Image (cartoon, rainbow, N blue to C red; front, side, top):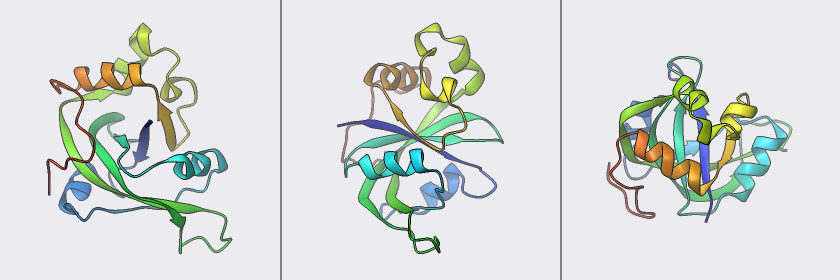
Length: 149
């Protein structure tokens, strides 16, 4: 199973919005980049992703879980793009900022550092463990176990 990072501008969809969606979760739509689309297509139910506040805050603030696989995005008139559904799993006690990630030599090859504009990114197991620890999680969240909602 893989790990991911999903970026959202908090003024459009924030961590608080995601938590408010509860256990039923919500769709992750609006992706219009082919590399990001391929990442969405690769996601499997039960995999987890970091929830990253982009532009405002620039920090990983929590963990979401994929609860529905890739399907067509009805907001895409071209029919080329799709979305997945996610729900909130656990917030970070300490948001992990982009600046902190860039300063950590263990994370120098993370996609967020080398291709920060990509809105849906893979995360390695090692990166996942480091960032969960930095975020204040005693251990990485267990898959398929909602803690919020």
